[in-house]
Length: 420
Image 1 (tube, rainbow, N blue to C red):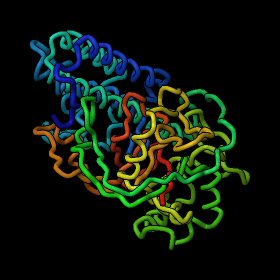
Image 2 (image 1 turned 90 degrees about the horizontal axis):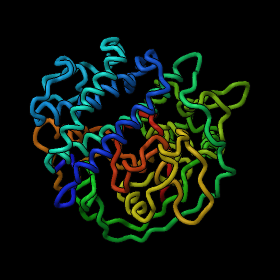
Image 3 (image 1 turned 45 degrees about the vertical axis):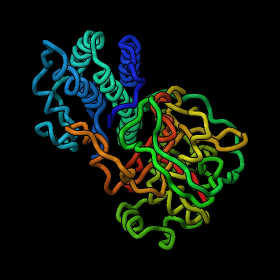
């Protein structure tokens, strides 16, 4: 076991896995349904991918790692797809550059839909007699697809933002709740703790092995930093004060000309922000979102605080229920925190930057073969984020989940929680 899950001794039943397979694959189709074939072709940056590519690549995963090697009599839908929709697996005879995915006018959108149906029909037959080990791979493939569900949302949001018409992906959901509660500090005692995944439910290989860490006493803010609070940072010259920034961050914002979070625009002296519902007035009580690690770190310095380490975050999060403003809410936008005791917004709304580099836990070993490339080879020049976002499926997130991006990334739903 490595990139798959720790299962019960007998493994999941084929019937339950079949139900889950249909639910996850159906959820992906639902996310793509509002988009035209033209929409699904767009690749608006080197970080993003077209929706059509996401639909095909998630299907490629099941065909490549399950059907072709294990399903007797299975024939590939199109032998060229093995190369075309490989994302980054170097041991599988190459792949196109990520930057040109938006150039794939062929296969057509309808052919990609045919590809999904072809693989789904074969998977329905395959699941009836799959071994426990093969069902582990199915579970990995479904969690992989859930990652791409979030990417479908964030990538089409970026694509529509680059369009001068600023179209909406979804209609505007429920209005934001009232004023955000006052930020409070939650204390955690120092000591020796265990972090990392343990148990029989699914986890990615980078979430283990479980191991001990020693932490001094620390404090976490009760909620995420809001737009109003970030505006104070901006108003105090936050983007012009070099002393607040890491050297690499200062160089980056100077070269890129950043003076506000991604998707913010000032019109007639008032700030607006782009969401999946299109342009609208900036909501002061919503969490600030679409900020890079550099911006999160600079804000924390300005506020007289810091970002949490991932160990601190996890120790705090294991006490919280896995619930919040996640994909199932249908909002696809951050929302103000509830007024209440303890930690708020630990799951959902925005991924929370930590101060921790994305490196292997002690004793980590990637899987043999191509699947070993899933997580391990990215353990360089990345920072860890925790907690999920408003586009993360609820069944996909947990306290031990380690997301990771380079420090300049901000097209994902990325926010700030302070620590001391």
